[in-house]
Image 1 (spheres, rainbow, N blue to C red):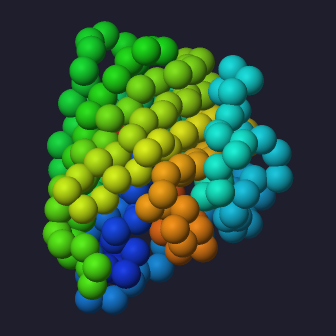
Image 2: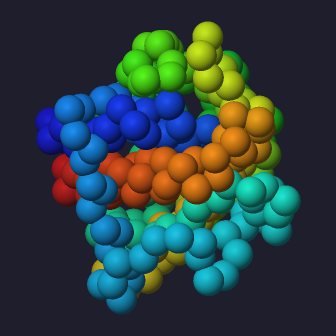
Length: 222
């Protein structure tokens, strides 16, 4: 059984979504939790926009998006194990606290054109009521054990994000797999406060990386 991860504060809850896929951190606590720094292949923490483009089969995030964040982490497991953990979308609720439900809208292996729908509770904030966010994601590019790119909107009674684009790469390095990720958001609500949206997106991705690391390493040790 994996340990429960810290959750973000209510001041970030309205915007902390990992829109193009799953696993954004949206539940609330009395005070905001700090995401642990990602461990890179060099052992150094890294956050913000990656120095090099994060792409899958030559396609990256939205180049015109105002809201973007990227990061990376070293996971002590094989690329195959990390890839399988990340792309087994129906199992996300078992290792991501913020994912309440997740269902495939097609069958078989995840592949370009595959779609899945997941939900996450969003706590009330001073400006929005408590709600449940529904994210519908569609895989655009995928290379098994190497990378995946998906896009999709997120909607609820109180929050709507027009489009998110999320790219993940999985590279074999000494000690395991270097996972790099970048995500962008577009839409009037996300762009109304770019700094806050970027902060929220980054916090969600950092926790997602930590959750993926714990899940993949636990799977690798079994």
